[in-house]
Image 1 (cartoon, one colour):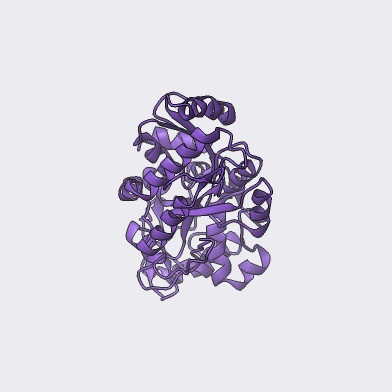
Image 2 (image 1 turned 120 degrees about the horizontal axis):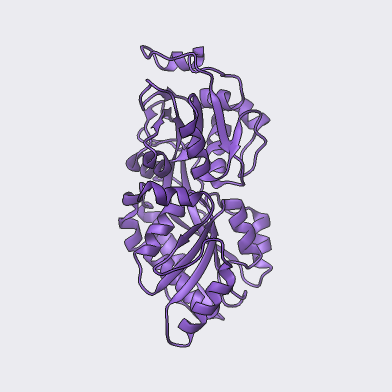
Length: 369
């Protein structure tokens, strides 16, 4: 994946085997193409919106399939759920699981929500500090104190205590955070709230929080760009974006007391002991295990159980296209996740995701899966 592709994810990702206009009406585009598919000819078009964390993967999965065009708006988890609730897209994409209020709002459209775990990824604590290599050690309390505005320079005693022998400059820390409703924010704040009582009480956790300090940027790509351009900056950035920009990032202390770098293996390890509830609303939050990277996020695709009953924008053709996309992502797509620097689902969670897809319907009839 090129840097040019990654930069394009800041506003809107168009994922296609064909031509589509970024920012065009996904509803009208999907309806036209999907109707053709339902009547027996042509390729299907489906539309989705949400997570910027997941956007590089959905681009990769879409380009690997024939007969399917995927128009995906990389607008953040919160905005994606809002668009799905208002029935302007065929599926939503969110990193945190749905809140009960969202499940109720979706159900009012005529069919219950189904949230399907798709894959995993690490959220890095990336920094721009000339002369300090990747591998700077940080723990949850120190990261929380940086984002609370209590640790203001890179040679602060808290950071020095974790990095003996490292020459740390007196450079001021510029804090970068998300400005939009973000699943990456939910994952990052979830970790900090779990390990630091002051952060939990003053900031809390979720897709939208009131930051006491720092500068906001939109999307993972926006935060990545701000960190890259600002000496002394720190920001929470999904691993694929960090790697594409050749960022330096910290090893973070996990629940077992180990400083672990964000890798595919450590992200996958973080999900091994996750309990899977009946609605598949998994949530990785300060996981156990010596090899687990502690700031790891899951991501979901959100659909209605009966896609046609709720009036999916593209009709039956789009409903079949959504299932095709899900089947690919949970099948061959898992094997190529590493090419975009994401981790596959553990076998137990993957099996439940596939089962959920197999239960999707169009006007009461099975769509397969």
